[in-house]
Image (tube, rainbow, N blue to C red; front, side, top):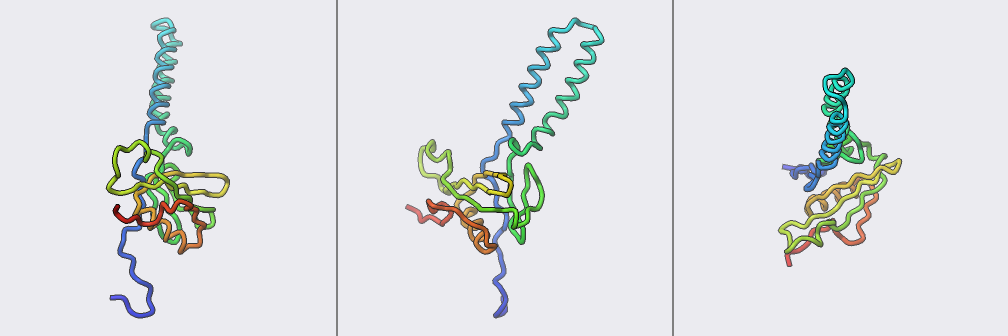
Length: 173
C-alpha cells in the first residue's frame, strides 16, 4: 500500500509502442542495389579478373547495405519509447535522450485514418518527437498510449502541441 505523503505507485507499463513501423525503405534500397549490381555483372566478360572482383565487391555490399540502411536516421523506424526520468528510444538511434534534448511533442490524426473503412476499436494517433537540431521522429501509437505520453511529457515540463485533442481519451460513440 501507498503511505500518505508518498507519490502513487505507477502500475501501468511505461513503454509506448509504434503500431506501424515499416522496414520497406531498407528493403527497397537493398533490392535496387542488387538489381544494379546484377545488371553491371551481366555487362562484363565472363571469367575475367574484372568480373571476379566486381562480384566480390557486390557480395560485400549486399551484406553491408541492410545494416547501413537500418542505421540511417531517415530510413529506420522508432520501434518503441520507454518513459522515465529520460526518454529511452529503441530503433534507429537507440539510446537515452535527455529531457533537455526534447523541444516538444506533437500529436495529430493518424494519416491512414481516411482510408480505413470503419471505426477502429482503438483510435490511432501520429506522434512527432521534435528534438533539437531539427531532428524529427514520427510514430503511430494507440489512443491510450498517446494519453500516457502526453501525461508524462506534461509532468516533465515538455511542451505538448495537440490542437485537435488527439491525445485525450475518447468516449465510445
